[in-house]
Image (cartoon, rainbow, N blue to C red; front, side, top):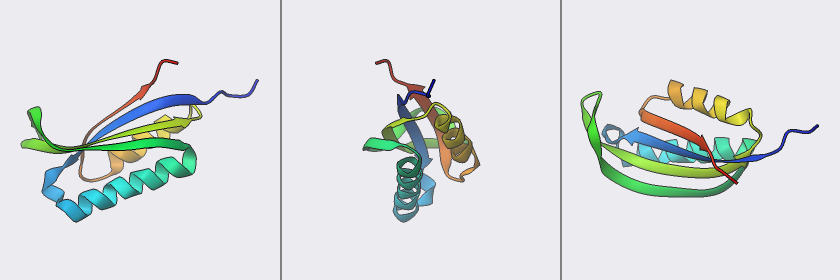
Length: 98
C-alpha cells in the first residue's frame, strides 16, 4: 500500500538578534526546503512578538508558520534541519486532522 500524504503545520521562532536580512534568508531557505520535498500550501509571517518566557536570554522572536502536505517521513528530516540551523529558537511540527 502506498504511503498517503498528510497535511502538516510547522511553526518556527527565529532569533531577532540575527537582523532582518538573515531572518529573510532563513525563511527563504526553509520555503525552498519544504517546496522541494512537499507541497507548500502557505507561509504566514507573524512577525516579531514577545515570548511568553525568556529562551536563551531572548525575550522576542520572529514567528513563521508553514502549512504543507508531504509524505510522513519528511517532517522528521525537517525537524533535524531546524535543530542544526543557527538562529532558530523553537520549532513545532504538527500533523493536521483531516
